[in-house]
Length: 162
Image 1 (tube, helix red, strand yellow):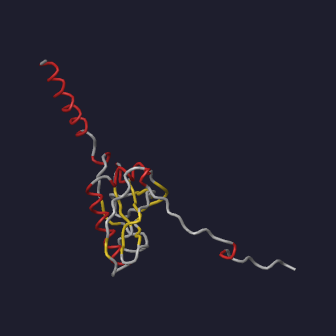
Image 2 (cartoon, one colour):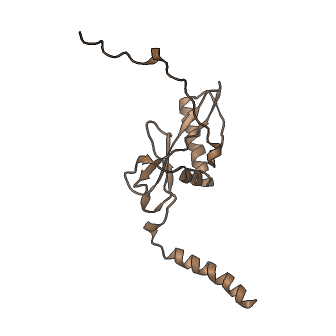
Image 3 (cartoon, rainbow, N blue to C red):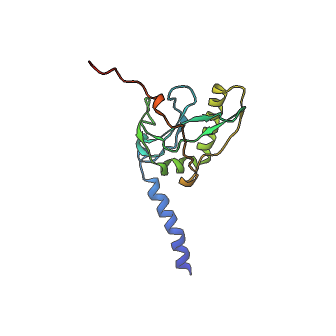
C-alpha cells in the first residue's frame, strides 16, 4: 500500500519537474490582446503555442435582428505569427480544434466579450448588446448562408470584338 501511495505522489512530482524544465520560449504564453484587422475591436490575438504562434480570431457582429447586436462566430481563425513580439501578423488558417480549445478558456471568453461588445457599440450604437457564447465543438458551428448570385448580378464583360 505504501508503495502505491509513493508512486501516486512521485509521478505528478516528476511531471511537474519536467514541465518546469521547459524553456519559456518553448511554452505557450497564452497572451491575449486586441489585434485589429480593418477597424478597432475586430480581431483578437491568442498566443496558444510556443515561440509566439497562435490564433488571430476575426470578430464579426450580427445585427440581423432589429435593435440587437450580438457576435457572429467565425470558427476558422487565421494563424498568428510573432504573437509575443513587437509586430504580430497573421497569415493562412489555424485549425478549428485550436479555435475550440482557445475559446473554451474563461480568459479568452472575457476578452472576446469585451472586444465584441465594443465592436457592436461602434457598428450599431443604438442596438442592445446580447452575448452569445462561442461554439465549442464542430456541431455548434453555424454555416453562414448568403443569397445566391443570379445572372443579372454578374458583371457584364467587354463587348465582343468586331
